[in-house]
Image (cartoon, each protein chain N blue to C red):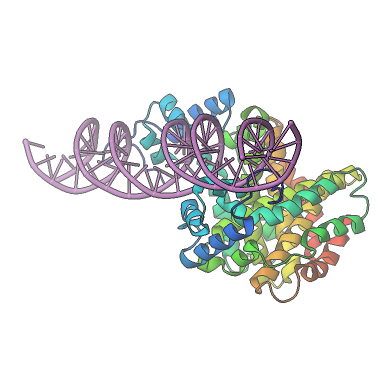
Length: 195
Length: 195
DNA sequence: TCGTGTTGTTGAATGCAGTACAACAATACG
DNA sequence: CGTATTGTTGTACTGCATTCAACAACACGA
């Protein structure tokens, strides 16, 4: 994590927010692929080296926010007994989307065409979906659910989370909340627990 | 596509099979990440440039076989009326795994640890799963299924296909067939069509 | 036999992502 | 004022992927 500017050592000159803003501007102006890290750094007023002090990759600018939330959720799902009841699982999933504000990722979903991001988003979304699905499946299996059913369950929940996020972001990320979308989707999946 | 060696023009010196074999040898010896395209080309007896005449990337060596099958399936799913009945969808999915023989991808699944491929496989599997899921969801929606249910349905079917492939390959890819795995998984999902 | 068109091979050059690292700058603290 | 700590920067390097021009090997017809 990034330490506070005040304290020991040289204070930071920039911030994740500043760099992310510069990056998003460029993504909108000329597309994601056509924007190099060097350009982002230049617009943000730092060196290319420093970019990597704030983000580990270009994609990290878009995904770091969601990734942190997913990592927390995956951690919780790994604890014993986390997959016993549908309510438990659904509560964990809610924490992923809870209080989510418009961020670079939401902007990317909302302007995927302008940024030339359709493929990239599909690709990276699938990765997060897979991560979540795996954790969910393992939690379900630990609770005694048979493997294939657990896989289906995990995939269904994971797609619901990512879909909710996408729908919310495509709508402009100003109106409503991704949680509302999720609450609408979850009941359909609950049936899968028993069958 | 690659044209036959006999015909007009200079005949090919190598083949996808030759290069794929060289690549797999190196993957097993020293891992996937640690193997550069230059090394693969050298072992296969061609230049680095020529590698790209046969494969579009290092990952393509592993995935081109499955990608072609998925592309066909996605094309079929895009035709009108392709998602009307569960039997239709399941028949299309069967064509993806039908007659699949041990190939670089199966070898990779079976030796993921030795090749240091766990992350890469998770990542790339998720991408294919997402592609399939999208096509399936759209076919279901075209058949009148409500959106969220269609998404869940598509995700469930897609994970079943990829899981079947993985289970088969992890078992050595010699015994059984991935189709058998799929036949075992599909009935659990059929319920989702009606709810 | 000799062009000619077609196709495959090769090397060189380029741009970009990501990593490693050493030199240097700016702060707090004793 | 020295020292430890932390942030910034430039440089160099590896590797992926693309582009392009030059060249090589074949079939075919004149």
